[in-house]
Amino acid sequence: MCSGTISSVAYRQKFALDTSTVIEVARSPLEQGWNYCTFQPRFRAKFQKARVAAGGLQRPPFEFWISVHFCWGDVPTGNSERPNFRAGSSLSNFAFKTAQYLKANPGARVFFFSEGPTETFAPFQKIVPSGELHLNGPWQTAIDTFSQSNILLGGPSSFFVIGAHLCNNCTVVTLTKNVKFSVKPSEISFSKHHRLQSL
Image (cartoon, rainbow, N blue to C red; front, side, top):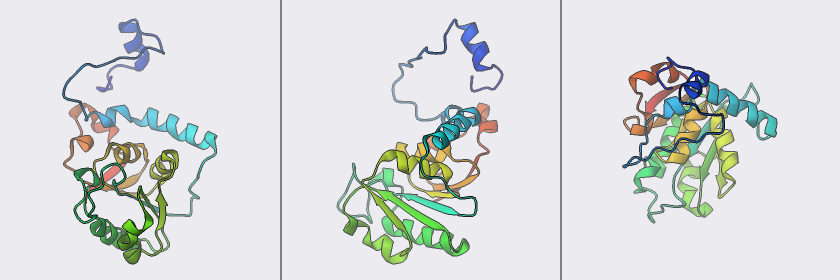
């Protein structure tokens, strides 16, 4: 189906599947690629439509949003300058990068998502005082915000990757060499909704 040469209807007919069929792939190790196929334009459009219908947070067209995800709550190391790999980078690097994007986009709203006590993230607030901290909040709010942001910064945590693949026309600042952002030849046409930049 990711090749784009067969529609989902034709695929279901070919293999005698109905719309409620779940296909389980028993493979080890866990396949973490194929995100461009999974979150292809049709899926993203359905997600965005459902998000709007749910009545959650909606970005006004005149606002520019920058979202930052610092993976910390489930993998704290005790030192935000040497976080777990899933964070992607140190807290200060996130702050400095965010400040650069904020300088290039004055007036942008900055959303910072993580888990943990507020004092852990004081270094970020010192460098980006206008940043809105969203700590220990509902995951739906974070995904809704990521999916509408103009710029997203984060590491290879699956949570951030989902948000990055749900956005439309955005810049994603991350570990670009990570398999979760690799584009397979059959996915090239699905990868135009965001631009990747190295964290």
